[in-house]
Length: 288
Image (tube, rainbow, N blue to C red; front, side, top):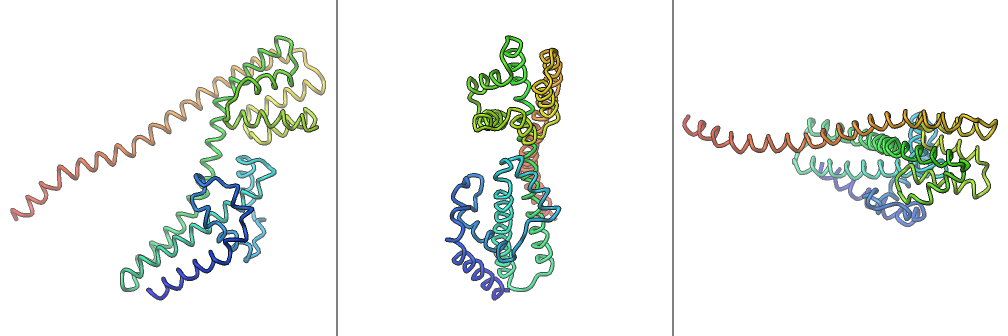
């Protein structure tokens, strides 16, 4: 096992030396806080390219939908490649570490090898689940912010402003960098770059992927196409619906916060139990 470990370590080092200068333009824009293995991601890119992977499976299309939602359609394929490179790089590093553990045992341990394979599979699954969590977090953030935006938009339209002017006023006055307000500013950017209002609003709905946003955009585009004297009343009604959805979203956030706090409390409880019980058990053993 020592020979296998040394061989795997040399292979990993060789892959890094071969690839480190080939993917700088892909890796440089990435946030090091989000991608902890940024310095080694070239290995993952190189491996995927050497296998001539096409990113065309059903699984990849599912991942692509998520990266499109998180990063926009323009950068979706780039972040799909980053996701794969990140996962491959981490798996290879973990494999080298697992082989080191096996080598340190001094002999082949079948149970440990099986456990190592299980860990590798679990980590691969965890990477995809992390992507799901980011999508859920983004949607939840949008559900929290959307009722405020819709309420402000409705008030401005009711005061006589057009949809576009009201939209511009809101994103100019509110400087939030939350996912919703980033997308709201992107709509104005698209329109200023020559895209039609209807096209910009429809793209906004596709990026957000929330039923309430899709419904809202449908109302707005219908108004732009055919006019609708009841637009304000419809938006007021939808605003009330969105506030109810926001309550549910806030409740979810509270439940998630409670569940996150539960695990540290459980570990603290177990630690206290061990501190209290261990001396008693040792005393019983000594008396025997």
